[in-house]
Image 1 (cartoon, rainbow, N blue to C red):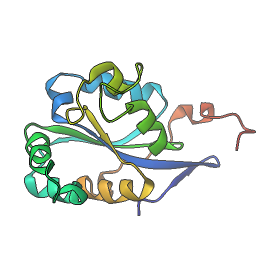
Image 2 (image 1 turned 120 degrees about the vertical axis):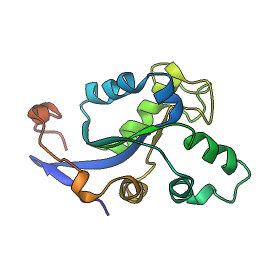
Image 3 (image 1 turned 60 degrees about the horizontal axis):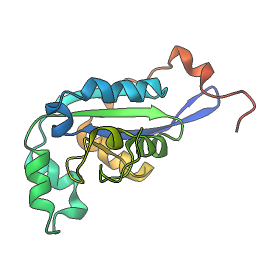
Length: 164
């Protein structure tokens, strides 16, 4: 399990975020990273990688036997991705809300997928769906030594002192 970091009484969660091949190929990496940063989320690890068929099978283990899996594997291995570990308050929920619905055509305007995607599979970004998934997924893409945790100077502006 990925340990939680506590900043001045605030418990920070971690999530894996993958900027998928369509995001990289469309040159949207900076735009998407900027949205996470403007939200006040903390990128503590990042690298560009090529997902191998073996890594795809590990990452999407619950989907390997499903009929759509071959297309999913072909897509995720087609081009480099940018893998990140993002940390923040309630970060799993926050990131998933920022992404919007899985199908870009159903995602609300203002969300990443609502603004930039029109596909269910080519939907730009993967994000962990729970703390348990985050722990498993982070370990697939990063060694513990690659996580660069730090206290951002703006941590005092995350929440009012009387918020729980």
